[in-house]
Length: 219
View (cartoon, rainbow, N blue to C red):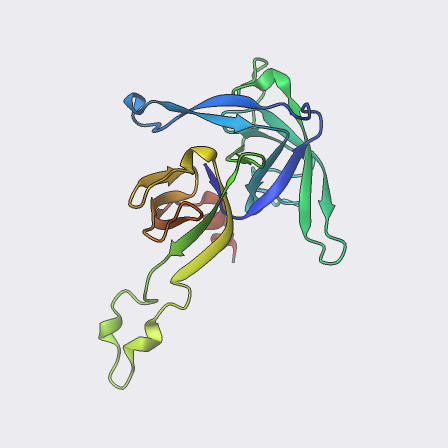
């Protein structure tokens, strides 16, 4: 798992200093690919876009008073947020967890709509992630009308570099050209710029974001 735009979550009723290890499949589509261990602790990172204070309809991620599943771990419910006094930006999300939902399932059968990926803050590895998009804004830029320059169709957002990403510790020894699927984020490969001191990943294929599609349709 990898968190590209992290915001801290503190699980207030989880024991301080405790660390649990959860088993996670390496490839959900291939049981022969084996499993790995993922550490879980009182403080974790989730994607900033996975939380809204005032969520609209069909937003099934984390929100005040709402319960979601942390992949492989527990159900958590948001209790309150802490904001930066000068900017108003959310810097901490405080939650409580249900210890009876270990592994991400509830014996009482209650339904949870959202499942989020996460990384333990104590064990997270810093990484740079490069998000590549289409080079051109038009499918056939060479077909520009007479007098037009195809350069005008260059996509100014064809590359976005994220410098504050957090990845799970199993990726700490990733080698150049290795390929991974980041849960809910897409497919990535390790860039040749990677060094023992700095991990660099390139996105090769994005995954469809259902919520982003809903938002786009509402505009």
